[in-house]
Length: 113
Length: 115
Image (tube, each protein chain N blue to C red):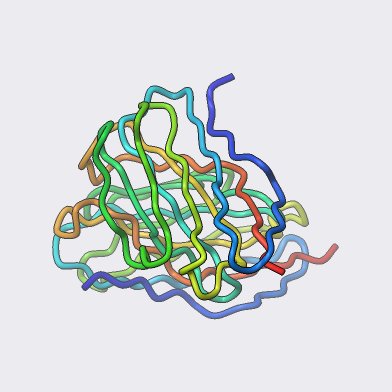
């Protein structure tokens, strides 16, 4: 079945540091890949997505590239801000699984001033 | 404003009582979903519906029930058969039914505590 593995947190960084959150996946079909962000006490918001190999999703300074050869979709940001503190979820939607979203367990990021 | 609303934000119930969580969307989306979130577990799919009057079990449907009588509404009932109902419940919707590239849009969630 489908699965998503993302790096365990929590991750604590200083403001302006470089961020990488690793995400790898297993899917039966050819999935679309997503990063969602959850701020404390709220629902999830889409951060970025990529629908085919070598696509790069980007938003608010965050980027992730769909790497089919390594089955990865790592999230990066060159300079984090305190306001980026949140939980980040990697997810996939697989036609082979009736398009259901499968989520990783989430990575808590804390950015200190 | 278009979006997904969930009510209430916090809900307390006694053990053994059924409780219904509301989810409404005005995005004209065909598909709707219910997830459960527990600390350190990510999100797990409870039920989903791709069209009115039809729904399918997700990965953890036991102890839950749903209905989809209207396109805009997808209420979730947590029954007394659910062994560990205390959790954060998230409703989502997406534009199409069965489209892998569709983004799912999430509501703000309901935190259910069973005493």
